[in-house]
Amino acid sequence: MGSSETQVGIVGAGPAGLLLSHLLHQNGIHSIVLEVRSRAYCEERVRAGVLEYTSVELLRGAGVAERLDREGLLHGGIELGLDGERHRIPFAELTGKCVTVYGQQEVVRDLIRRRLADNGDLRFECGDVSLQQIDSGRPWIRVERDGQVDEVRCDFIAGCDGFHGISRASCPPGAFEIFDRVYPFAWLGILAEAAPSRDELLYMHHERGFALYSMRSPQITRLYLQCAPEENIDKWSDDRIWSELHTRLACSDGWKPTEGRILQKGITGMRSFVVEPLQYGRLFLAGDAAHIVPPTGAKGMNLAFADVHHLAKALHAFYRKADETRLREYSNTCLQRIWNAQRFSWWMTSLLHRFEQESPFDRRRQLAELRYLMSSRAAATDLAENYVGLPLEACIG
Ligand code: FAD
Ligand code: DHB
Image (cartoon, rainbow, N blue to C red; front, side, top):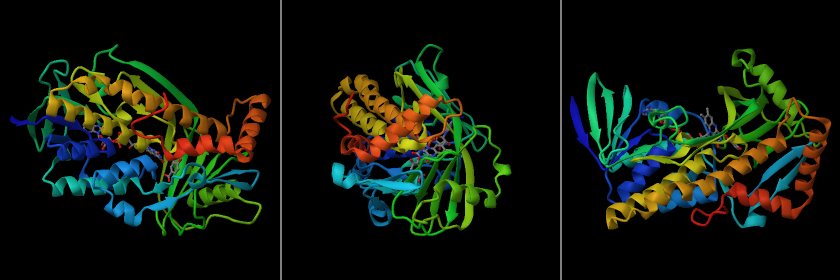
């Protein structure tokens, strides 16, 4: 049995765990990151793609945005589609801010490279990981790796292991209050080797279900289709996917998505979920381990970054000035932003998807809301302000 010592034991090398480790390092705080998957798996996992203005500022401030600044695609707006007509929501004009399209796996790649260049302790391919004595002053993490058991002793544990991780589940029943909503649909997402034929994202409302036109680079398109939660991906041939995309994204001006080889496809369920508080004893939860949102508002990764920004600041105050105030306030500070993003993601989802059980009244109300959004500067500003991201420090509660 081996033994390691660190100040902060971080479970999970996703965006939350990696950025936290980097921010702590910049403040002279040592951490060890424990990840069950391989480095290649983490770097290739295709997920989110839109970075809020706020997240870009955070990554820039942390000195890890060099490639993001070079390769990220700056978007000054999105388009909403209804009845084949597109309507632009001009973020830059309404808020003075833009979002950046840059794949989550690229952010992960940049962070891993930087942590390793700074001699960071990242341990991939851990076997069984379990949290011990989290309600004591000196918790530890038991890790099986390369046939050996290691004890990682730390002052604090950061649970950054995503929705299906073990951190949240390691706490006793009743440690958290749970807020949960499951949606009656999912997204079928593809990554295609096709040059984007639009400059901005198109969120399309359609009788047959929602469709989203997005991109990753000047060569790669990312597209999504609303589907049933139990949909079998094997029943979706490439031809069927393209045909459905053409139907739903069809525009009256004749625009259509450019087809290309499908590089990857998958189905993602839609859920809103929050635990309160984000702390149990010496365990602090961050990112998807504590909350998930339906992807419509593109908030998942951004929320994870905001959490670890606050956690790094709180840990810095603790180590530098023995001040625990920020650690005590960590959960409440994050929850303001989390609930705002929950509201926004739920609202975007409700606005754009077809609900099987909807009444004729609900349908008319949904269409009225979409048309209002397309005709009112005030309504469009509400969407724009939330989409580009609220400031990290002063969040509307
Ligand atoms: P994660 O990225 O989930 O990272 C957690 C890490 O912990 C993983 O590397 C995991 O392997 C590791 N881990 C798990 N269990 C353990 C353990 N026991 N021990 C050690 N390590 C462990 N958001 C959007 O905005 N748009 C999208 O299109 C979008 N698509 C998504 C598609 C999918 C399939 C999923 C699951 C999420 C998607 N999201 C999307 C959400 C977004 O990707 C997440 O919000 C973001 O990844 C959160 O980062 P995180 O670091 O908190 O968690
Ligand atoms: C993407 C994902 C989203 O959830 C979204 O709202 C916009 C874009 C994307 O993967 O590109």
